[in-house]
Image (tube, rainbow over all chains, first blue to last red; front, side):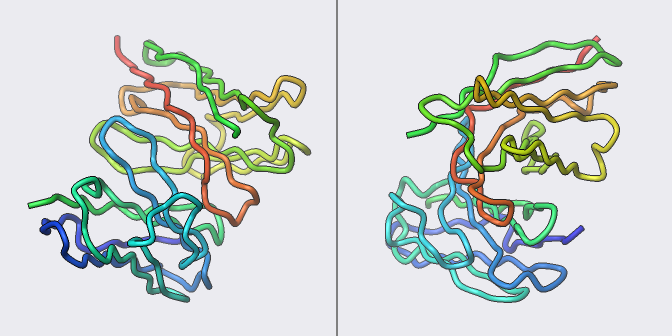
Length: 106
Length: 119
């Protein structure tokens, strides 16, 4: 199985900050990397697919980049409603998720 | 807009099995894949397996092979996940999730079904 490693596991930032979460795959996966946001008691929500494509309806402050093994999710200007846990997921083979990054608003 | 509507919460005894349903409301499965994802309390997301309802092709994570069966009824637009030999560690929320193709992200999720395994 392809292992996905996210960092950091948690972070705290202020409204308006630029936030970056990284995800590393244990082997090359081209652009087959997706990002999700999950709020407590809710199902995950797809934010970014194919490494850098913004899912319909997702605010443009979210962006993704990367290729091969290293990927990033960036929130350009953090908003209060962005408090959530974020997961990366590879779709190159049997899907696997990163362990999650809990984002808290200061 | 298609929604995935899952069956309700379940309480099961260790050693028994559970069957959770996932109905596509407002549409059909077409050529999409339906995956099942597990989330234990306070833990992350774990992919369990998937089916392509249009042709019945199925893949399972090695961890669940032999203990899990995914099926789909095209006529009703409903997918099912059955997990057997339940143990307390299986207590979790189970989600179904749609992907347009096997290498796409999961763009639509069910609301989740809480399964509690307890004696």
